[in-house]
Image (cartoon, rainbow, N blue to C red; front, side, top):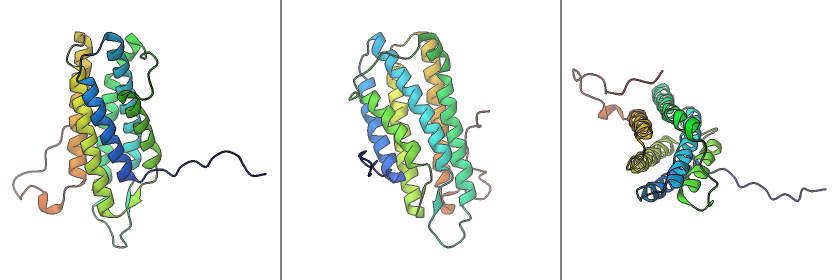
Length: 212
């Protein structure tokens, strides 16, 4: 007897998932730039926490992205190393909020249509879209560029939450923002072309020290 369950929609392509993430992060940044009452602020913190956790895990998988080129890809190893480092920074950002969640707990139930809830769902979708990533080198670069945009909006969203928090919470949010900057730096390095590298004698590209 055939199943009556509707077929699950196919996962998004990696670049499309990154674009959706950027759009959701932008909406959250706008929403969180407005004054929030204590309950809303607590809820936004828990939503940011969930988003960072899922993105850290998804980015670890994105590091394995294979291109469809039949020629050897000497840049694949460097790409994987840089994206893996970015994943570590995202997980470091997530862990920066552990103390806040432990002290205050998860925020109250939310309207599923609010920007923070949409951001959480979109971040969760990257876990599927980036599980076995593949495509052309151009696809891979487009994914990373959209992902960089998404993290920039997450940084803006984090900055918005810094406006009126208690002092201990502000310290945690500053740590999140610093980790997001580290994630962006390594993603930019992942798609840096040889001609964009520093000239001889200028030293290697500068990246923040990876979290341990």
